[in-house]
Length: 157
Image (cartoon, rainbow, N blue to C red; front, side):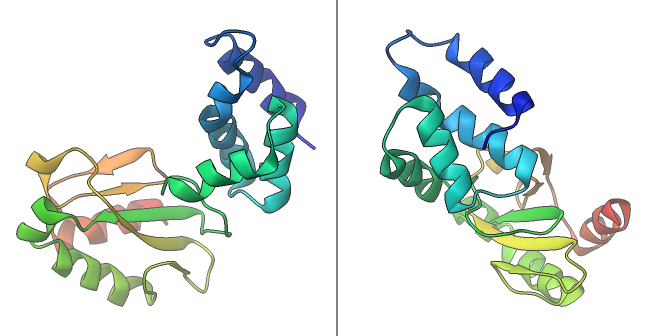
């Protein structure tokens, strides 16, 4: 069941599209529900589909195609490190290794304290600031070094 707050936000998103094209708001609706619940369960995806009047599979296809949606529980802070070519050439591998050592987890795992999840990301469109990572699909950190990563993690804790 979608919350009243989620419905209100989805209704606002629906104003951006023709009335007979409710499915166009599926990405926004999934983002709204994920932000509220922390991740997208099968039930959450079905709730979004039902509200928009589309088949469950149509919402599931979107939720599983894009890496900004999480279909399994993630930590409080989802750290996504770009490992695409520009970041790789600027030593993103050392940032990944540092994060894995520091957090005690690999990609797609959650730290024991439930605080951090580490994800591998494709190009984030900020190649000039490589290597980079995002936290919770919202805050982007560029020009990373192990020292800068330590400072970011300390601020998040």
